[in-house]
Every structure is written in structure tokens, then in C-alpha cells.
Image (cartoon, rainbow, N blue to C red; front, side, top):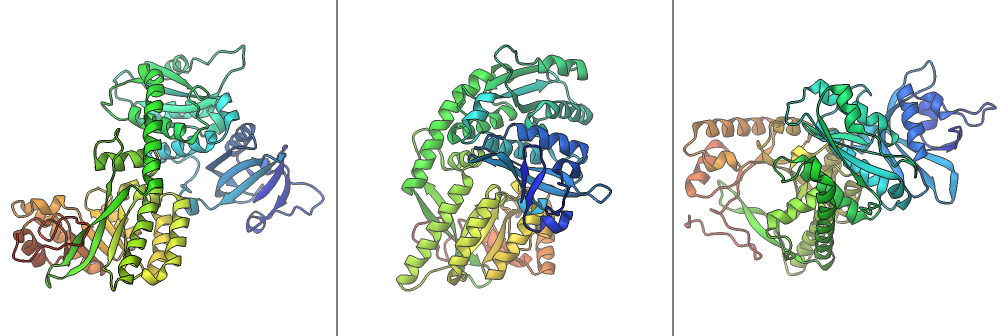
Length: 509
């Protein structure tokens, strides 16, 4: 951590950063932090510092840092002021991989979904609990091209332009192929909002539509309103959601109100514990014996949410899935301990979303819970779902190593559902892999699906990874998987989800 004065001179330096950067604050000549940065990094830090109020925190964003004439290294940075010391700027530096932030060079292009997620996270960090930033900032969304296909170069040009005018130089992102958003300062009392759409048309030659949301009117310092804005932007970015950029200001305000109510209802579900667990058996295919059960959730749905699936998707979209996953882990642990007190418990696997596993705070809480319940490692295992939404496989890989070292088993769910599945398997060392049911449902008739199944099973055997086949609905499915060498099966042939750990008799099916 570095303590800077308002002119960016380093007053104190703690931790490994002193040796890493060769910082000595006892010298006669003070060191200015800006002198350690590239031109881009200097501009970014200066701009970000202007928005610090004592109530907000900015970051993480990545800059290159090093002494003049020496090699500069990538660091992820958080910046803040304290309410009691507004004449000081506190900078926390970390290696990017530890926070799930890309450590690539500043000129490299990140994938659109990664940048978009970073934009949402920075949006929350900028506004949450910060009425002053709320009063000073605007959020503008743009749609470029009027239905024309934008080239990669055009999209980069638009994003670069918006970043130049965004808060701290890093509050802008491409939300979809032709849709963008950025946060910028509100003009003074006599000023007018800049015509960003007009300027972009001059730069790119494309037709551009823009709409601006006043952060104060949307009360973005309130956490639930902020989550509702992010949800609205996500819907705006999706295809066929029913409104375009010309309607975003009006519709966004309406959606914020409605979504805020849904967020409150979801929070109430968690606070009241208004959900239950049901359990579906996972069976050893050759022996026909139950190995463990997967825990699935059933909600007491609030009136404005119609289905279980909608509830989960909503929690993911508004950033509440980590709270939910944490609650489910706690409920599963309580259930196991209850059963052990009664004489014995089966193994239970709990699903964890890729979004939750991309949250460093959630990972810290999860590790704390697992270490505090190490005696349950024979009974509790973890299933990683939605692996496509994991932002940093290397960082998660280190966490999974720690989890497995404690003794808890880790499963990778829905393998084969995405094009990057083999990359996940390479980066994430797991104990078992669940083959996506889409390959199994039609495998009896589809030779191509059977070929994919065989290749997955062979790969896992070579890697020493246990396999579980999903969607096993008939005896024929079970026999096919057994013949291919799949270890375990899960599906209606063995049993539907039940609160009472029920398994169908083998002669049923």
C-alpha cells in the first residue's frame, strides 16, 4: 500500500511494493508516484484522483509501474481517500491475477465480455454509497451504425473515444456489437452535456444515437438502484429486449423502479431463508449404488418472479448470485450436520456459479467456511456451474488447488456445453467432470453425439478424472454410458430431485 499526498508524492510505502519498486521514503528527495507511470497511467491516475471523495473506492484498473529507466510491471490498483484524511490518497497495488484482472499489456485488447463485466464492476465501485459522485456523474449509452455491421476497428475507435471522456479514463465499455456505455462528469450549472453522438459521427462517419441517464435522478448511490441500472444495461445490450437507445432513458427509469422491488424481494427470500434444498441421486453405473446427491434449490417465489429458473437468472444478472450461493453452502452444511446427529449422512454436492467464483470476496468467504468445516470434507463437494462466466481461470485454478488440498472434492459441471470446455479442463484441476446432458439425451440415435461422448470419456480417463453422465432418462441411456466407461450417472432413471434422498428401484425405468 502507498500513501500519497494530493500532489502524488509518496509519504509512506508498506508491504512488498517497497522492494518490488525500489521505493525508499527515508531519502532526502521525495518520490512522485506519477513519475513511476507511463503517460497513459499518469493520465488515468490523475483523472481518477479527481473523483475521489472520501466515500468511494476506484478500481481495480491495470497500469504499468516502475522506476525511470527500469522495467515497468503490471499492477492492479485500487484508489481511495478516507473521510478523516481527505488530504491523503491511498493506493493498493496487487498482482493482476490475484484479483482476476488481466495482466496483459496496456495496448492489448481484452475480450468484450471481460471488458463489459469490468465496466459493471467499476460502475458499482464508483457510485455505491457515494452521493457526491451520484450528483456529479452521468451515464450515457450509445447505439452506433443504425443496424449496420461495425468492423472491429470501428468498435475499438468508438470505445477509445469514449474512454478518453470517461471518469478516470476507464469507465467505458462496448456492451454489444453496436451498443456502448460510459460514465462522465456532469457539466457545471451553466454548461450543457456534450454532443457525444455528434462528435462520434464526425470521427467514424456512422449514424449514432445517444441517451443520458442522470445518476442523481436514478439514485445510484443506493445499492439496489445501482444493481437495477446494471440489470437494465444488460437488457439493453441483449437482442430483442423491446427497447432501443432512443427509449433507454425512460425505460431505464421504469426498469430501475421495478427491478429495485425485485431485488428487495430476493433479499427478503435470503434473509427469511425462504428456499429449500432437494436432492437428486448420482449413481455408480456398474454397481448401481448411490455415490452422492446433488443439492438443487426450490424457492418460495415472490409474486413478481414466475419460475425457479427466472429467479436464478435474475440473481446472476443483478449480482446477487454470490449471496445466494453462500446461503446454499450454509444450508447444505447445516443439513449434513443435522443428518450426522441422527446417525449418518450421504455425500452432497453444491452448485457454485461461475459469477460467484469470479468474485474475490466470495472466494475468501468460501475458503473461510470450508476451513471451518474441514471435518465435513467426506460429505460436501462443490460443482462449478456456468464455467463460461469465469473471468480468470488461472486465479480460480489456484483457489481450487487450495480447496482440494483441504480435502473437498470439486466437480466441473456441464462439460462440453461451450467451445472453451477443454481450456477449462486444462486450467482447472478437478476431481470429476459432469458431461453435459445434451450429448447424452440423443446419443442412442445420434452417431455424432456418441463420438463426442467417447472422446470426452477417453480424455478424462487419460487425465485420471472421474466422469458423470447427466440426463440419464432410460435404462438404455445407462447401459450406453456404462459400455463407454462413464463412471456415474444422474437423471430421472435413477431418481427425481426429492427432499428425502429418494432413489428409484433398479427395476423401474
